[in-house]
Image (cartoon, rainbow, N blue to C red; front, side):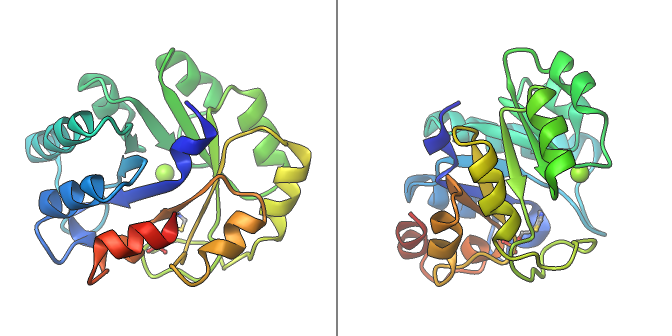
Length: 205
Ligand code: TZP
Ligand code: MG
């Protein structure tokens, strides 16, 4: 993958959307998102066959617009449907194991400090997500907002490594995240709750 693939990284699950999720996704793809992660979480999250069916529909749309399609956490599903890759957190399987399972595919890892960053980079991650930068309503177990200081340090330490910022990012504060050295911004609510998705995506770019 290229660093520029991370420019506008849209993350979505069915519970994030007030509109029909596949309509939101297609609209976001048409409007220029550069990366998509299916993150199906929450009390009413799809599971089993209905999740697989939804994931396949998202994958078909992403293919149509030539945008990478990544699945959060669910390694088995990502392998089963041949997604472009997977995104894992610190509580998921170790990076070395994931890297092996996703040979030739994209592996993203959430990191929050120097040690996690080093393990991810040395373990063969393709990119890291750093956050939450700002306060977020979209992740129940999110850590406190950390601002951009660790992201700036990660950029200084790893000048060419693909980094995306995440957590509470809006059209107003995205420029601060990019100025700190992120290659792009990963958002849920900024796009899911936007009244004008095209305008929002353009501004995030
Ligand atoms: N990981 C850290 S913050 C976050 C995730 C998945 C949620 C981001 O959602 P939003 O609505 O863009 O703050
Ligand atoms: Mg996870």
